[in-house]
Amino acid sequence: MRILITNDDGWGTPGIRLLAAEMSRLGEVTIIAPDSPRSGHAACITVAKPLYLTPGESDIPGVRLFTTNGTPADCVKLALDVVFADQKPDLLVSGINHGNNCSVNIMYSGTMGACFVGAEHGVPAIGFSIDSHALDVDLSFFRPYLLQLTEHLMAEGFRARTCYNINAPVGEIAGVRWTRQCRGHWAKEMLPHKDEAGRDCFMLGGEFVNEEPDAGDTDIRALADGFLSVQPATIDMTYYGAL
Image (tube, rainbow, N blue to C red; front, top):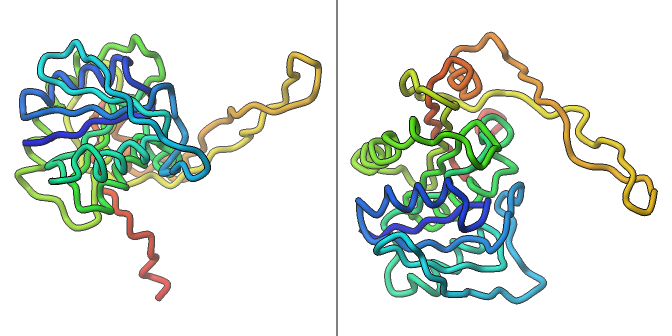
């Protein structure tokens, strides 16, 4: 099996290193990752500057490594048109993202943006995230699920234009739940600051507002209950109920 791995935190972070080590047990792993953090880039692509694909040296046995100055979406496009030009990868895995991609976060996520590009091109794609932004978060509880879920989803097969958004709580995991995207939004996001010159500016912050806190089938509730959330996602953004 030919496996492509990317992320939006950049090569060298604990999440992508663990993911590469685990996925190497399933097949031949190639990493194409941003050369620095690209969180919040969604499926953004680079159109106004050249992209560079730089071979690197991985200390994970059998893993091939490239870095690029582009976004996670760029990583997948470079993989499909350059590195895997003769034959598409059998699987795309993105992450492990440091920070959950539940609810509306999926719209902004570079981790899931890469998966959406994979789904566009018919490559089975799975995004893995953990509910902590700390780079030293304990991933040991999440680790056993990486291969189990990947093998299960590959055996079940992927529907056209569909990928999977998997989010794990911090610490011991109570089990796995199939979930839907929670309805919610971010509020009070633009926080006033002063720059080094004393000029007024704004920094992104805010607080998440859960619009359905009593719902038991959402990704947000799964994490709150200590469960791992598996959410199918599609790149078809048509609202069929309005047709």
